[in-house]
Image 1 (tube, rainbow, N blue to C red):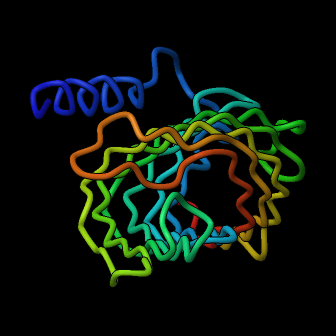
Image 2 (cartoon, rainbow, N blue to C red):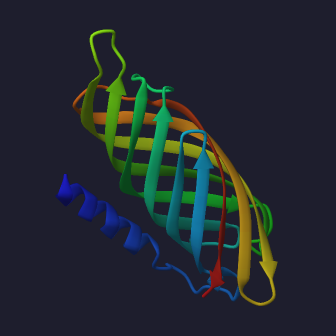
Length: 186
C-alpha cells in the first residue's frame, strides 16, 4: 500500500511539470488554506493548485478529517478523525483562472472511528479503522483580490466508500460539502 501511495505522489509531481512554454496567465499557481464542512464533519487542509492550461488546473490537498456521525451511521454514536489527501482537476470558464469553475476530485482518508451502541443489557463500544475513498464533483467561484489573494467558495456533492474496514462497519454514503479556500498566487 505504501509503495502505491509513493507511486501516486510521483505521478502527481510529474504532472505539475509543464510540457510547453507557459504563458503569464498559466503561471498563476497558488497555495491556500482550504476548509470544507459537511453534515457530520469538518475538513481543514493545505491546498496547492497548479495551472496546466489557459482554463485548466490540478490541485492537491493534505487534510485532517474531524468526524461526528452521531447516530447517522450504522451505530448509535460514531466519532473519530483521520488524515488524508486530495487529488483533483478543475476547468475554469474564463482563461484568467477566476470566476466559475467545475471540478472533479477524489479524497483518500485513513480514519479511526470510535462507535457506541446503546443496548438494553448495557452499552457496546468499539473502534474501527477505515480507509475511505470520496470522489466529488464541485462548483466554485474564484475571486482575485489585489495582485495575489484568491478567495473561492465551493459546493461539492459525492459519495463516501469505506473501501477497507478493520472492525465493525461504520457510516458511508452520499455527501454534500460546503467550503472555501483562501490563498496566495505564486
